[in-house]
Image (tube, rainbow, N blue to C red):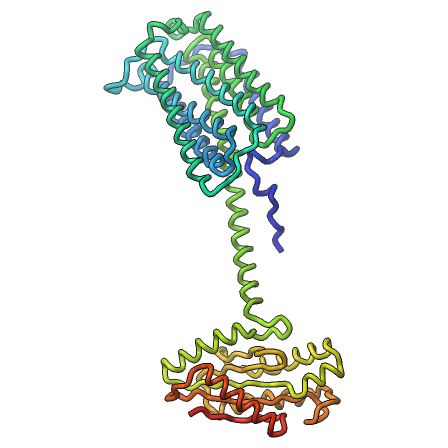
Length: 474
């Protein structure tokens, strides 16, 4: 049997406490990143040739990864309504928007009409704005993570969607405003680069951004309890530290080994959380499929239980009523006959009083087994009509066929020789049966058919029991 899905299994990364396995995996990823950083650090200033395709590939990967990550986080916010998640999703959207703007104004990459002309310091200013902004979003996330989410209500989706749209509008407006400042107001920008070489002022600003990133990492670390999302955000920030250190602090300028390595770390940092979120979504989707299958099986079991008698395993009264109405309609539509047999265990109250109710239940189960085995065709139905009364619905059966089925069932029960010391019909349990038939040209209702079979059953009892009585319906 499948294990039940617990609340912890359904928890989001933002609410699921980090387990030792999560911490070990995050530490491994950080250690590998740090090893590559140490290996590249001595050669950070080594000049390399300019690869014209590198920036378009780099920017495309960043924008795609950050946009998907933002979408996944916005989706989690719409469910959890956590302000911290809204801020973090906005941070990833911010990096995607600024990266896109960075690509539009990077020297020699695009020359689009209508786009403000970039100056020599514009792309550097965008890079610094981008790398200074994300740690601020992370610090805001760390500060808000302990807040209690808003209570769910019927208007949650609408409220959440409005908040997401506002966040998107603010991020796009801020990005557009700074981009216009970095292009149209480029005269006010400090000199970050001279040619492809980073100036002293550029190194100072970048060192400050590096420290800002370190502060964001510390803000996450100081939290008393860490979620899985917190752990992987710390891995992302470590990758960002290596990115800024190699690509802007310890290198000498554009197109050296540190510059290329730093931007490679940027792609790695953008993909870390995305991979974890996609993996988590895949896992939860698999659990959703499993839960759906289990729910379908449970519903099938409940449907079976709701339509079958718990003691005898035969169809219950509800199922009998539905099936009789269905077969009655079919018989009328196709001008076919249908038989109904009502059966009653003779002197069953005396049996219960003498042998006890557990023995009475066992007796009814034996009778039900006999009646069930008498239904030889798939369309035949044996049902517990009520108490010690049973019914057989026999579609496409005439009076002779129904009589034979009833007589066979009566004789099969007699052959079991179940002791009945207080029966006037003999020393063993016996069965009385009343048979009624709906003829092809008959116009009686299903209830009238039941009444006819009941009258035949009364006739069998009045005639001495342990017999089959017929009540042909005109």
